[in-house]
Picture 1 (tube, rainbow over the protein chains, first blue to last red):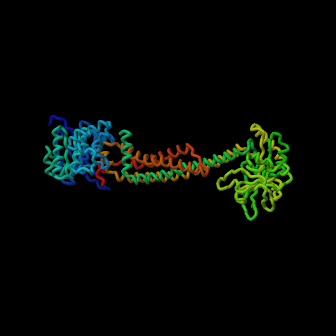
Picture 2: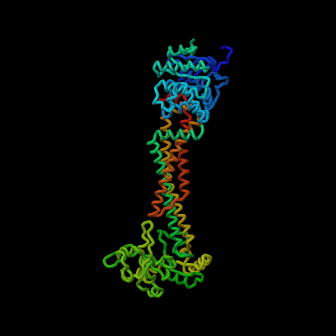
Picture 3: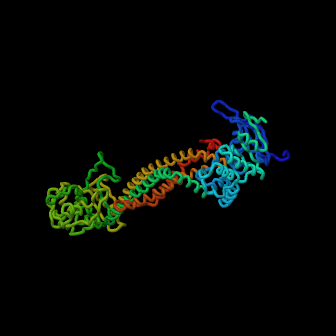
Length: 226
Length: 396
């Protein structure tokens, strides 16, 4: 492992939030490296800063201080649109509340990241079909999210995360809204993806879920404590 | 993101909120409809008046009282110093004219047996009036030069008069009372219709001599001159001015041709068209504010969607175009419906009143509606494009 270059490298990441005159430091200097093929669970109690960390790792937010090297390039000083491009190409998101577009079919939801990547409609529909088949929803491609169960919706979201073939899958409490059976299905898919080489970063406060990862990072009061 | 994808996306969002989209579009429809219709009315009016003036005899010059350029004496009344003798002088001295017809105009009440027609427009003129001004006589004849000079009490009547006093029966040879005297009907004028509620058939014509005596006036309202050819119009105007200046001052009269009369009227109708279009544009502006309003609501409602799109890689421009296109589609859709309705209404109105559809008003209305979409859609679209992905994603 040590010989490989990290895919994610955070150095002394700090994040301050300003509320009126009060500055709150949510992350107080986090340094960590994640290597290709890792399956890392970031865990901690609510208010620990794990959501903020996940936003920074997912390039949805920028740190106040520190350095972030993603896949070999420093992304700390990129513009908003360049960050959008990085998210589009490098990271697949899976959210707790699925975040599917309610008016769009499963297929169209899966296609979404490819639209912003500029993939032709024929190519992206082919790819989306393959991915939906892989997550076991070949029969449901034309269903709208409200015609799907929670587990099925989250599988659509995973297919969407894989659309642009990113190296990193960032899953924020992916089983939080699911029953145990559906949660297990989702975790199995993530494990399968990891086995095939994807780097998985899982944010969760559930111990049972966290321990299924290969490595656990505990966060408390804005610092890593293990 | 390609344009087809954007159009599909925007259409779907608009269809998802059908009622709201239709109501928003309604504001634009009304604005565009009003522009097309009012501009059509304005240019229809212009066309009508132009046709009226052009239908008068050819190579006409009008001598009218008052200073050139329409300057008025205090109180706004023109002191009319034109006399019948001026017409006679012009007729006698001008070499290049085909004809001269002085006219006096009065309103009078006309009676026949127990029936009355009030507010009849009486034109007293010379025997050649109808021929000079191209007003055909449908039945009977006009009065002769001899009748004109002797002041014979004969009249030619318009169609409205025939209907009102004779129930449409044949009035020729009957005698009617105009003012205080009895006149014999010798001819009926061809129907001319009405414009702006002024009935051009509620009229009678009589010899100018008897009209002066009957109404107790010496002035004439207008003297028509017709030049022998179009080339001679400037010469005739020149000579006529010199002749009239011997008795009158330059502020007492002015000369107009069909061309100058037309350009004066065109100025007025152009201003009218612009004013009407301007009023209609206000309606369109209000429609645009409606679009901006609904787009702001839509951006707020779809904050989470915007956050998701940004998280998945949408750039500012992608979000901006998505919302801008929705606004433009609303306003252009409204614009197209408004144009169709406006055209329909103009065509219907053209049958009963004056109305003429002008291509530039369609072009104007369409570009206005596009501009309204862009201008009023811009602020909400910029607002959407600036949302931060994390805040938007966590928006409930």
